[in-house]
Image (tube, rainbow, N blue to C red; front, side, top):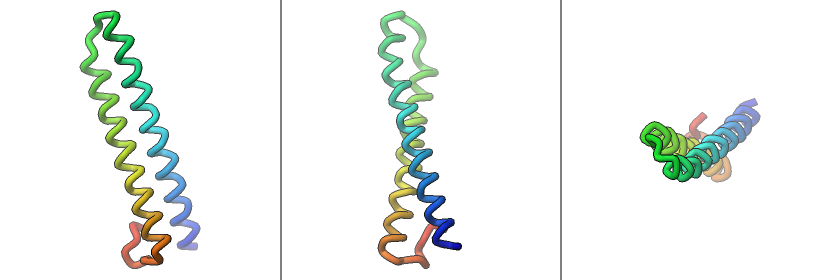
Length: 79
């Protein structure tokens, strides 16, 4: 049961991390179009930065969980 929970947490963290990272990259690409229209880009810049940073953080949690799981260090596991 614990292994299934670890696997579900790993898959969810990887999926959410990739989705948020991709969302931040798309927002950053849209900033270039906003510059041509001379619009205020501060809000979009902050949102894209937070999305990219959040995606990287969640992906790092997934990688750490995978490392703990593969190294059989279950006592150091995040779950």
